[in-house]
Length: 142
Ligand code: ATP
Image 1 (cartoon, helix red, strand yellow):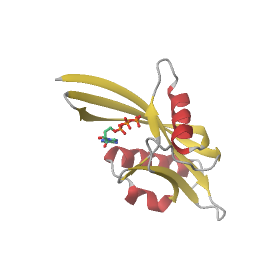
Image 2 (cartoon, rainbow, N blue to C red):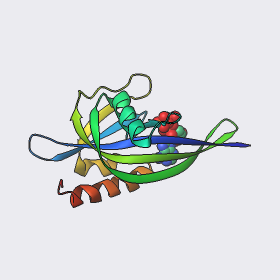
Image 3 (cartoon, rainbow, N blue to C red):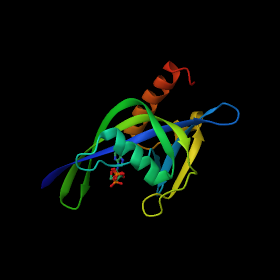
Image 4 (cartoon, rainbow, N blue to C red):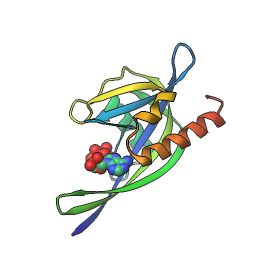
């Protein structure tokens, strides 16, 4: 059995709708909703990777507001066990239409913040979302 490490970075992107209500950007791959993320390239800063992946996966331009923390999980590909680390940032939406990347993403969508928790599948995403809510409250955005 071989073990490999993988490192990704992603974003919890928020914006306010016309009524001033906070919305959060989620992506769907098959039947699971989560936050946009992707592989950090060699030598690439984590925050740059997170912004790049949000743009590539969803079409959205954003800016970093605050680092939210890292999560890790394991999965298997054939005989290889992968230990994956993902670094998340809170990001403010700047512009761009929401267009899911065809190859990897089935859907990308802003949800009202009070509908996010029930859509998230992974415990690690729930943990990062909780942290994002705390930071949004601290910043007076919620
Ligand atoms: P990336 O989006 O970083 O480029 P990827 O699409 O190749 O990565 P993951 O999204 O990490 O890969 O998915 C790889 C495997 O891990 C899949 O089987 C997926 O269901 C599972 N997985 C994805 N996210 C989590 C998580 N937060 N907790 C546990 N398992 C997860």
